[in-house]
Image (cartoon, rainbow, N blue to C red; front, side):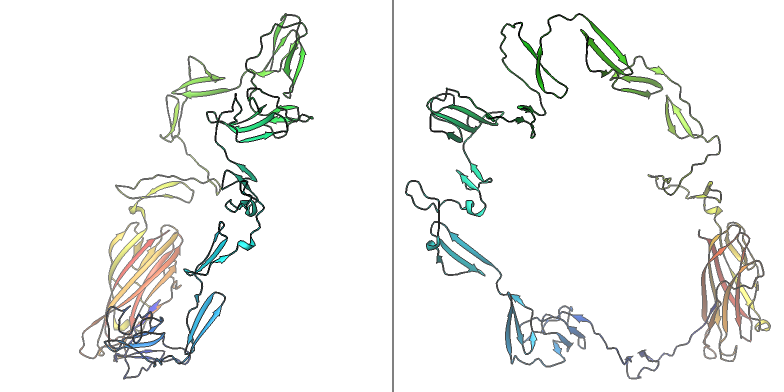
Amino acid sequence: MAFATVSFAQTGNVGINTPTPNANAALDIVSTNKGLLPPRVALTATNSPAPLASNVAGMVVYNTATAGTAPNNVVPGLYYNNGTIWVPTTDTAPATSVLNTSAGNNLSTTVNGITGTAVPMVNSISNTFTPATALLSTTVNGVAGTTVDLSSLKVEPWSNQATNTQATANTQNIYQMGNVGINTTAPSSSLDVKGANNQPATTGTTTNATIRMEGSSNHVLDMGTFATAPYGSYLQSTEKGNLATILPLSFNPNGGNVGINNATPTEALDVGLGNLRVRNINTNTGTAADRLVVADATGVFKTVAAPSNAVTSVSNTSAGNNLSTTVNGITGAAVPMINSNALSATNGNLVSTVNGVASTPAVPVLIAASNGLTATNGDVKLGGTLSQPTNIVASAANTLSINGLQPSTGKIATIVTDAGGTIRYQDGSSVSAVRLNGNVITTNAENNIFFYLNKTATPNEDLDNLNEFSGSTFTAKRAGLYAVNIHFRYDQHPSTVDGGDGYLAAVRVTKGPAGSTTIYSAQGYLKVGINEAGGGFAPIALQRNDLIKLAAGEVIEIQTLTYGATTSVTGYYEVSIYRVD
């Protein structure tokens, strides 16, 4: 790779898209299909510098806002600052035409052909209706309109019982939602009756129920809600003239099934989840004709004849883990004998727990560990000395990770794997790294040779961990990716050195076996402009940075050159090479 020196004329002006900027212009921009886009800002008024901090004479911006109050208002356009105010580059003529246009709810105004942003005409609207007076009023943008009397339009089928007039004071939910409310203004069901919680009446004629159904005779059905725990609701069938007289209450009197906690009853009374309980059963003396009530395998009750004899035989039978009992020749359903069985080892002791009962005493057991594992009182933990080569196989699906590692407070190193996958410890002393510097002297007799190899004394090596550098050659001891950084510097000479046409310098990196001329990185050249005779030296620098992949034993050679000079030239170089993978 080569580095070249470029010379630029210093004329005090800048040209964009032109090699010959106008001498009278500090900046000369040339284009046939592009324009100059100045800064776009939102001015607030011609007499305010905002958003700038202060007025600056000669400042030019393009205003994007329509703001301010006449005569200091601003409109979009190009403005310049005269040091006191903003001045538009075009005249702002007074309005000669004004046109309003409405579309939907939006109104826009056009002045002198410029249309402003449309705004809503109606921002708010509300209607108010008073049922008692049938008056309707409308308020638009906060302005109330004339009240309209709608009494002539009312059609109310509900009437007040006392006056037989339309019940306009009641809520109209029956029309709006299909719900009817009694004693409530917010019915939540088709019929919503609200009453007070109270216990069912047991005497007298005054009911405490919320709803009453009565026929043409003296019997009634009361429905209500309890006032005390556990609360709930009730149905009560009584005489209307004497609530102490309880009358029958029938469910599906013509047949059918009744479900309790069951939405799909299949029997006359079908109880779902939950227990059955009968309180205060009579203790009458039994007879020979009495029958027993039992449930079959599906839970359906039935009666069976009471046994005439006492228990005469009982036997148990086990099969596998099941136990069945036979009484008087009748065998019951088999049940498991062992429902749970668990083994546990705690502090080296084995405990067996069957059906929740733990064995005593515990039985000591011996648990040993090796090859990186430690056993203490039967508790095996990770940690110990490896006693054999150990291989842990991971895969893309089953990876190996370690979490919770803490920062190092001492020497920093890296855990790496070699080509065989063995984990190794690597610190800075085992990393391939070279850093050196020195001088290379090129005599005028050699200036016609294109490249020079090893034209230097022994370099100054302040770092070479693996002894991989010698002369101008780096030999890789391990395969990998290497970073190569070269800095070459020498002093520019006056025109007397080479007749005033400058001279070139170059650096190059070759890769391969020793002495290879295969160029890994392109040569870099530097053309140097020559000072006037008698002028001071000017330092010239070349920089080359490469990433090179090397096999073990392959070499990198560092080559530098200055040529075209008529005297010897001394160059200073700095080189660093280190493995990055």
